[in-house]
Length: 266
Picture 1: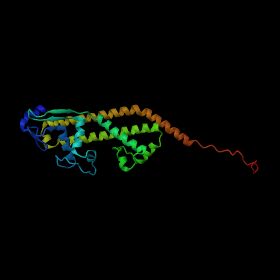
Picture 2 (picture 1 turned 180 degrees about the horizontal axis):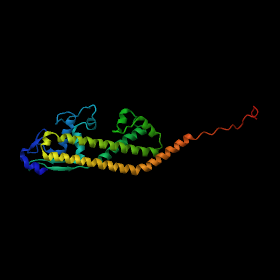
Picture 3 (picture 1 turned 135 degrees about the vertical axis):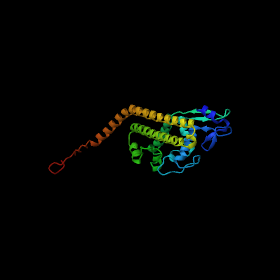
Picture 4 (picture 1 turned 90 degrees about the vertical axis):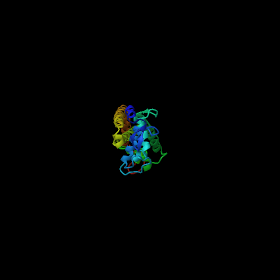
């Protein structure tokens, strides 16, 4: 990819998002980051080179997940990597490998675990704002759920909270990966990107990498859940069965030690 671009324009650079780039005394081409930032702005109907924080947009999760194009750029570059390309011989050239989705999942798990522990312990009250801190697409955490966890024995609390953290962190990570995919698809359509074959190919490769990462993450999550949930499920079911049984045991009738005999106490 780099060789193709370098052979094209040398010190003059190439037309890129926001102007010429890659040549002498010009900005470098950061394929992943530039495409993602352009896609972010286009999805929110902003100028393609905007860099300020995006205001909330009804019906869109994008500005809630990443408030600025730079935040989205950092997240996607962490996952799929970056190619820094220039067209002049003496200019900087570099590549940054991505680390995939697993570190992002672990990061989400740590954040959710801490917030959930604070809610269950009572350190944080279960207000709507605090509950939203542990919510995720398709996983609602309500006041009633927090109260139900509080009433459980400590051992059961740990099992249930572990399951909940796994579901929330996975949902959050996959949501961000799908948003990142959308940004790459949108940014790929920017005229300057579409006109540069190597940039188009880079976007396609990044999208394919994200698809593989999502599949791998979901597979690992399913396997882990199947291994852990069988034991956890049996333990929870037995504990719930014991509690139900204790509620169904009728109280024995009390026996009066001095019953009435012929209308009087003997």
